Image 1 (cartoon, protein in one colour):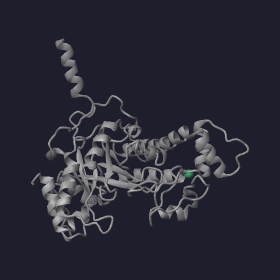
Image 2 (spheres, rainbow, N blue to C red):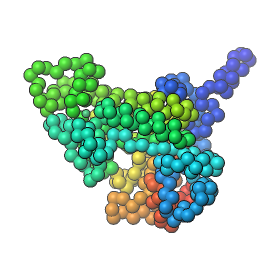
Image 3 (cartoon, rainbow, N blue to C red):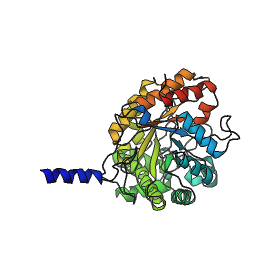
Image 4 (spheres, helix red, strand yellow):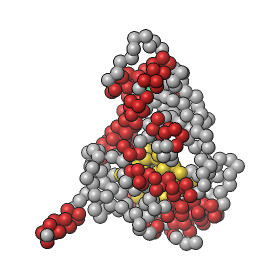
Length: 385
Ligand SMILES: [Zn+2]
């Protein structure tokens, strides 16, 4: 028994991830680590949790004219321990590291009007065989199966980690299109472009009946006869691309962590739209993602503040991974005004949730440009009332 106990201790001590900070390691080759030892700070005090800025507005008043060393010092004084969407600046990243602050890159995946314009084939096609609409001015979701775009993104990931000493990468718009930041989301079933129809047939081993001529005919036939395979194909499209990104990142920096900004819906809400429409399956993604950052914007989504904690707990349960919810501190939708008190309570709700290992304010600029909000952020991160 004694020998067995010693062996157990050794196994734990040398298990991947033991002694790591807030994250669970995944194999550097990008493959899922099914037996990874889960290092978690669940149950730790909020002081130990990650306080991650989103963005670093060097032109905002508190930072303007300061050296990078002074910026890093100021961030520390604010209680910030990490910066996501950190500017691409070698010296700045080094200075943050010297201060013990992590620096993460951020990238938008399947989004961008420039893609619609330069590559019209990337404009997703709906079940009527027509290009989807622009549900919100400037928001243009892109077909996630375009090979040229996937290659472009993977090359960008490699380049980002070859050039800068980032500690990780957060993926945004890693899903099919849909405007979710509304009380009533705007969703169109897609994408039925030729590339997607071809890939779906190949991966699901199905043949389209010869009498189906138009895109609309094929789309309707899929939805009526192969709905389940279609949803699985969409989720696999997203999950497999995250696997590829992880691999591309790990080739350059095997210690870097991968996070995603996920849509804050459970599988049951909006008739399962997070899987059916958006193809974002957090349970499957957990094989490749170190940290989930659900976008729990309570004002945008017209939800009570307690929902921030409820959804954070749900993601933690569903994925087993650390969760750093990203919470709203901006005055949206207009004419909403968030007071300092509301910003404080929002940040604390995100930090104190049982399933939370950290929190991100969306965005740091909104917090530092308003003295009441900045004061609230300092108090929330230092644990003061
Ligand atoms: Zn497509």
